[in-house]
Length: 509
Image 1 (cartoon, rainbow, N blue to C red):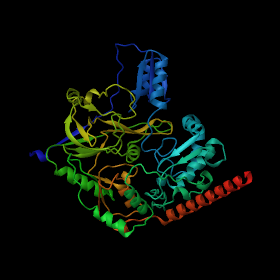
Image 2: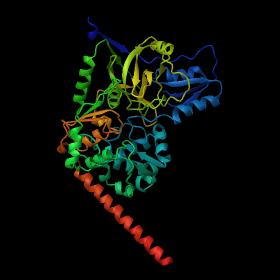
Image 3: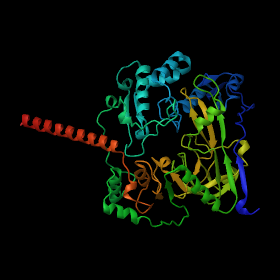
Image 4: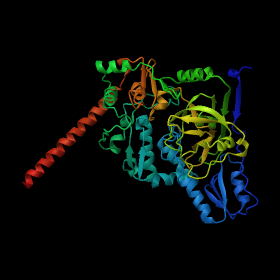
């Protein structure tokens, strides 16, 4: 068999193996941060602890000599836990978690099972300020539902139950993807958050932030502002057409190509991977199901549905030379979700240590110690990635978790925190900064899509644009109308403030 066609499949784990407490050290307290309910909890015998964790996938627990140490462990692993990457709501449920149920039905279920949902209710009642980022992707129906839930749970008829809201985002970017009608299965019409019935009651006039951090070139910033409003001047189009030239880099890491459709992305990445020589290593994720908010086990079908929204793939194939993107923030250096690099070798953790290659450590891992792999994975080969900034790291599996309303694990995927990055969908790129970008607008179909794609770049020098035409730059007229109304409101407010200031000065003069 030729080297080009050899394929090696790596299954990360067959089943999560519970950690057995060492018998050599007698522990007096056992802290369970994640396990069968009630959780979190502290137990005074290993038998009690084992009962809560032995059959719970993804259980987190540890033995200590003192209760104070156990309580500190619970605090570090529960209170300060990293937010769920798929969550859009203050109780850490995936965005689809309540979308099909009326607010009164949701809250009725919570109050009817108070003991089960007590933590969820306490979160809603205890929050003072709720920050929602990328608000342009929040459907107006969902906004109204959350607003009503907040009022009911908090027993407060003020908008959003008296919670201070801080919303950030740009409605000129990609619109929300609406749910399907549960009866007809037809996709419902798009409703922006600012169209929600409760939006104006909850929010005052918007604050327009004008300082741009991603791009430093003033001409590039001006071009992007024109795109944002759908105004493309002839000289703008001339500049964008001049960007069709190929940009080459000496380190072998190529620009990430942003495409409009996911099937195009998959085809492009697979084509580039298959063109590389050498063996293919395929990493199959370990998936495990936990419990729902009521303490019932999650079925395999429910687990698959929960995990399908994760960025981490169920399976990823890699070769030396594969271009990849990091999908978790790392402790090391300036490496964040969106950093691009290239696979330069495959090594075991022991090899990496002998060769002084650091092991990647996720930002939510606050321990200063070196990451430790389960014994079953010690001999596995994992990819070593060289990133654009020159850092070289051994990429080991990380957990990607979906949690229930009580902060417990519903579903978990353990996978190497990488995706192929020769190509990426525009939708997946929103919110990311990519230094080297190639944008093909041939299949652009959505309003705001061209603007989002091109604005991922940090400079014109690192940007290549194919198939640019002014007709590809589409803007939602409803967003333009809303934003113009906001600007008019701000101008009237400024005029009133100026008039008041002039009157005040005249009075004192």
